[in-house]
Amino acid sequence: MSGPMMGSPGPNEHETVGAYALGILDDVEATAFEAHLATCEWCAQQLDELAGMEPMLAALADLPGSGTPAIGESLSAKPSPRVVNKLVDEVAERRAQKRRRSFYMVAAAAALIIGGPFAAVAASGGESGGSGDTNTTLAATPAKSLFDGIEDKVSATDPTTGVSATVALAKKDWGTESVLELKNVKGPLKCSLIFIGENGERVTASNWSVPAWGYGLADGKTEKAKNPLYIVGGASFVPDEMKGFEVMTLDGDVLVKGNV
Image (cartoon, rainbow, N blue to C red; front, top):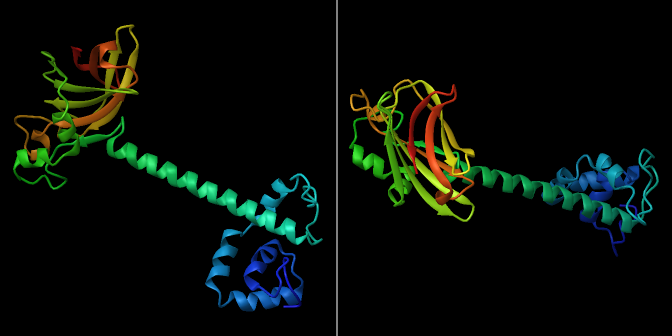
């Protein structure tokens, strides 16, 4: 190195990574840093974090008192060490925030899939359609366990379609958590569970598809077809504000409806 970098009391290649990412080192300094980079995993990781900084610096160039070039101007002039540190820290923090937001979104999506308003779980013997004990299989199903744990339930059977539905309702701070048990339904169908409020408002609690083999069929050829379908859902109003529910296809045909 030709001398101390970025305000360091002595040569410090680790602190040079920001200046290298900005492209403000001279040829001698850049060559020396690249030799160091070949053997330093920490600097390689930091450089990867700061890759493509110049477009972001354009957005940061109007920081009050930064002394950085205006947007669109060349970065050929070296910023002061204080400014380099500030810009590097700012970019690193913004990228860290982006990573955190991505992590939270993935975590929220996972929580929704596992137990959220639109989760759907078939209480079946698995994709293999094995002939294992039905009761054991149902007990191991999270949606079935949730259904069994809710005391408030309403049921209905449509005399025309033969479809039977039991809806378990649990009051929550945010509204109502529901678990639908659906039997004697044949596919293929795309369906919705809809709650109807006392004021006439209609809220879709969940959507799902019924495959060709169906669910909850007494004469089903496989365990999957014999077992009911359990659907976890949610509504924005509480049970006391509901007057009924409907299970209907996305084409508008009502499979079964009942009172709450």
